Length: 137
Image (cartoon, rainbow, N blue to C red; front, side, top):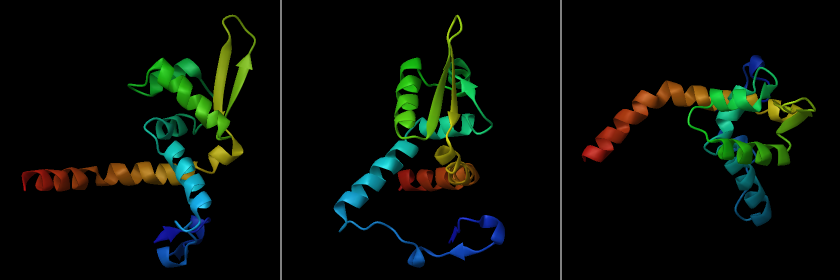
């Protein structure tokens, strides 16, 4: 079961009454898939989490996201900006300062993203044991 748009109400929807795009609506399905691919790629989730408390400078983002290269961070930030999920503010200082922050639409993703991250963290041991059992058989 999934929470409705207002989880504080404690109401839940089942998968059977949620409106999902179907493969018969080819264009709709493709667009939704592209958006989900962007949000759930290797680095975007980390960027959303890093920006959850407000604007962050580029180099601070790079320090917060272990393992991301400068090039990959730049590419991912540009894609998220293109999709309207983050905004980029350039301050004309020397050296130039660039801040990134979630847009209004990007902030609406925080709850589902954090739920996904929390779920993954809570279930990592169960999943690791399942992988070990599978690999051993």
